[in-house]
Length: 227
Image (cartoon, rainbow, N blue to C red; front, side, top):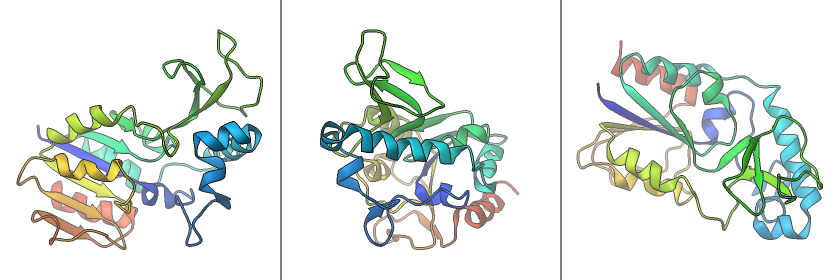
């Protein structure tokens, strides 16, 4: 059975009602990135950071996986599928995908500020004073700008073994996630689903563009791969 690796970004979750990473004004759901998504922001104003992620966590309970999430689960009937996502929601898991790697962390988890291996599932708001077993403050289990990406090496190894690479709903501008495409084997087919693709055949010879949103684009791709 062939290995399919799927890279997903904000456009994958947008059709479930989750806002995309940044709007045209450069804001992240109304907040400046530097004030809510960096280690310095957390050090300067942890309450604001907590409030921001608490709001985003609550939003997860009001949305559900869209058809594109379910289409990727359907692919598992025909291929070994691994999803590497930049998204911090749990929609792939709720669609029952078997193998999901979160490059940028997960909203429904928190971790210790002193021990990054101490990770807890977390369903409610996170506050100052919520601590680990050693008395250290907990923080969102999110990879902030300027921090290392712990799952990157694992993701690279998986991409290197891909027989086919699918990219859905990502601008291919956020690094190091965008660099994963460069680790595929020579001649590996690439399918890029996005209404406004940012790479072309000039960049990658074996690229097929599907200029569509996640739901319709993934449905079109399944017709090519399965039906």
